[in-house]
Amino acid sequence: VNPDVRAELYKLRVRAEARELHDAERHARGWRAPEDFGNLKNELTLPDEAARFRVAGLLGAGHNAILVAGRKAGKTTTVNELVRSLVDDEPFLGRFAVTPAAGDVAIFNYEVEQTQYRRWLREVGIVNTDRVHVLHLRGKALPMADARVRAWVAAWLRERGVETWVVDPYSRAYVGSVDNGNDEAKVGAFLDSLDRVKEAAGVSQLVMPVHSPKAKAEAGEESAIGSQRLEGWPDALWYLTKDLESGARFLRAEGRDIDH
Image (cartoon, rainbow, N blue to C red; front, side):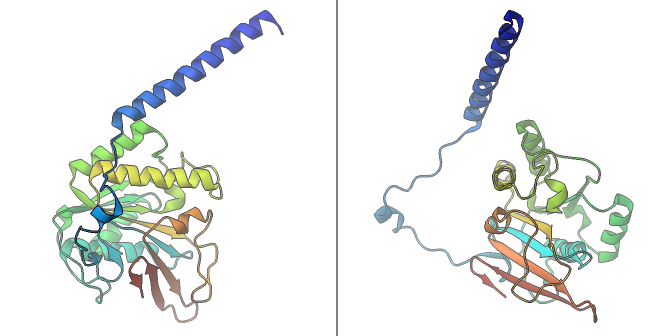
């Protein structure tokens, strides 16, 4: 091997090892030991809490939810109705009671042009508009794989007192972190990064619309596009379907303590 090549190879190896050590040290500084209850006998002495819901029967306190729907089925409309219900303490879809909370709602809008989205939000008729914070990200990326980006997002959410975070939609939000939506490891790492940001920001709930690969599917056979990790991650899965003939929309939900 050419001596110059050997010398350059050595430098690259040193830099790579130094980068790994630097990343490990940085992560170690922000790491905290998880809560430990001791053995199961001790843990079972703790009182059981009744299931707490932010939206009755649909979204538990502290839960992650994905809203799976085909193209033009009404994902953004449904999300905006959810936002209005949460900040105005109105039943979601006129049916599901919400539990009042002091925290605000943030929307990361990755898909809709901001002027159009602003008009849609105005048409929803939200009363407590000061409790809603919108970040328009169409054509932009927030690569959550980067620790600096995660820190910035967490600070943005924390400074605004956000309790529920809407990330709309998944396929745009993962840009910069995932280059293949079928890659189980990369998708899993991206979803983990959302949970890490939630914890750092003090966010309780996260709702994320996800496209379905099919415009129409039989009831109970709907699925999210891409990696199976996506449907294994949330506490609640909402499936929104639209009858192509009548235009009627239907919402089905399943998950932990959820079945509608």
